[in-house]
Image (cartoon, rainbow, N blue to C red; front, side, top):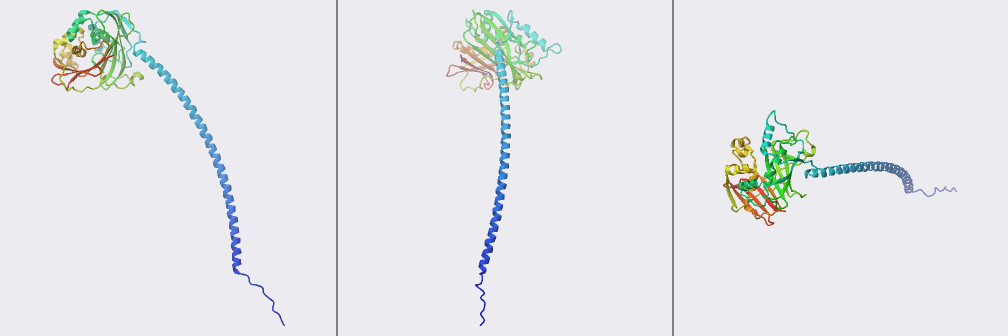
Length: 405
């Protein structure tokens, strides 16, 4: 009997598929690990490269920062040195401005104004005249010692202006007394602008006490602060009065003159040309008061002629209609300082001995003229003064302020 040989159990196809899947998974896993190892190695390489570059950049930044710091420190030292130099210059300029470092030429007496006016007129003539160059501040300075008050002249001055004649000197009188000295300086070659045509735009007087007729005075004058104005150049003329035997200035005046159409020279000092433009104003713009004026005057040629005789100022704009027209005025005009003195008359007896009197000359008073004065007392005891046209009060001639010091 033949026995059949057995084939054994049959293999499940599912097992083969699983084995193949596991083998494939192992292969993929191996490849993934290999790729991960390469990526890690690359990342490490990149990290090291970036670190190196960052370090290099930090070193460069650090080096640059050190350079910037060094430059900044050097610049700071330079600026400090310049600042120290400028501070020294400013201190020097302040001393010059106050007259402390100026060399004052001592004159034997107050100059003759008529002779100076002739000199100024000749200096303005073509060919024979002098050429002015606005390069910097005027350098000349003069003084006259032992000046006594001429009582007859003071009487003529107070009569012309309507002020009282007494032992006390009106605050504005020293302007007349020192005016020939101012014009002397303006006639000199170092004065930067022509004296002819210069317009007196403002005047500030500072007085530390009452001045009396029986005292003897030393007077000195100098110019300073040449600066631009929209219509030309402005320069200040300083007058200082010291009683004989004393050291302190008791009366100081700043008279500002505008040279119409004047310009700086091409080689003018930088420190002068860079000064800010000045309006010529020393006071706020006033409003027309709502109340009636405190005083009214009718000024004619007699008033002007009386002031001409007292001041000895024979400028043609004040003495001749023809001369006035040559300078653009329709007729003779009153002196600005005549107006400045006349408006004080209603306040005499009320003014403090120590005061500051600031005046702006706005529109000229063409003679004959009817003018009106408004005096406004402030809460602090100061006064505002406005001289206007009597029939046309919108026309402001003079704006002024008096303050106690």
